[in-house]
Length: 204
Image (tube, rainbow, N blue to C red; front, top):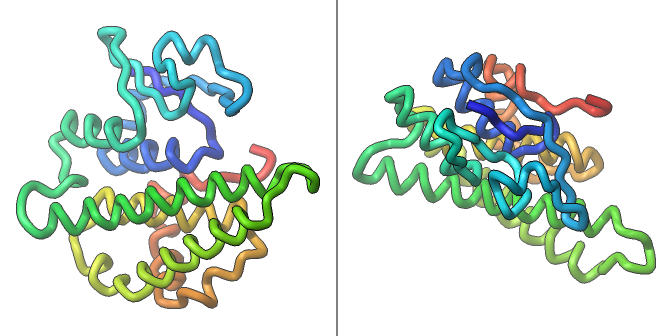
């Protein structure tokens, strides 16, 4: 299997954490693929016309995207337990995953807007993104006892990736003061081998 990949993408990191947790990482051929909103990657578009990563090319030539579909495919392939079956655990895990994945979407848009030139940047949008991020973090902080007590799943992986992306791309944003219980949980999660080996690094 070939994974169109970047070491700094939080969505790719989500897939790689799943792969390490499921002991499938050594079966992935990583293809570093540069993507930009204004510059479609023509090679990647042969597999994913959206020109987005992660994209997983299977051995039969078909492709899977986006990250949640790839994670569920890997979990199914390994007969894993990262996606709970039926009942309350399933809906709780999917809800926490959706919140964390949505937070990642907000953070990526926020970063793109923040990095625009002064004449193009919208302070109104930046304020809205920051407001949504704070609201999401407060909710996760209130619910940290609930999800930390639940079986390790795609929810924990995605929450961890969102918080890791905050640390990586928003070092001046003091989210740990805003969500102290969540910060303590995140410190423990980052020590997990699948998280430590996939942590993004500046210049990498």
